[in-house]
Image (cartoon, rainbow, N blue to C red; front, side, top):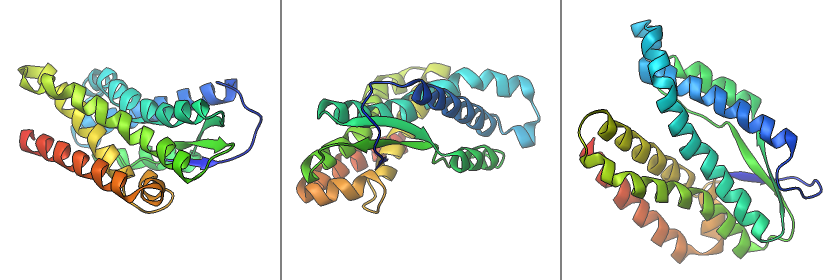
Amino acid sequence: MYNYYYIPAKKFSSREIKELLISVGILTVAFSIAFSKLVISRNIILFIFFLPFALLIVSTAFVLHEMGHKLVAQKYGCWAEYRMYHRGLLVALIVSFFGFVFAAPGAVYIAGNVDSERNGKISLAGPGVNVLISLGALPLLFLPGFIGLIGFYLGYINIFLALFNMLPFPPLDGSKIFRWSKKMYAFALMGMIILFGFYLVFS
């Protein structure tokens, strides 16, 4: 997901890096709380154990998704920077204590010459990155033990995030892709649904 805001173009600003790091830190803690079911287990060791795993999930499903938007927008000569949502991060942290994570941590803001086609392609880049990661995680599903579990959650969360962002309602990515090309929207959505179904079988 991304929004528009005008500031002179830069590749990465110190503010963007700072807000990305804050977002990653909070989301990593939130996912680790949810994975370890900290409220029920009260097991700090388990919470710490899940931190690297949570960081991997956040770094792929969230950071690379947003960077997909950013890099395609910059390819078109636009200004593009990530900005965090303070309330969204707070909500993510709070709900994690109930054993799941619902997050709207922030978005990439875009400014520049963006028509409907470019808008759609920039929007598709985020879920597209998630799909590639989910496809890349497929071989791990056939490995035993913890590696297989990591592969499942890595792929499952990425494809789930891709599908969620494909909902055709503003300000989600799907609304902009649908406005650009209904055929591309249908093609991308069908592929994501098939991949998601594959992960459901393994669940």
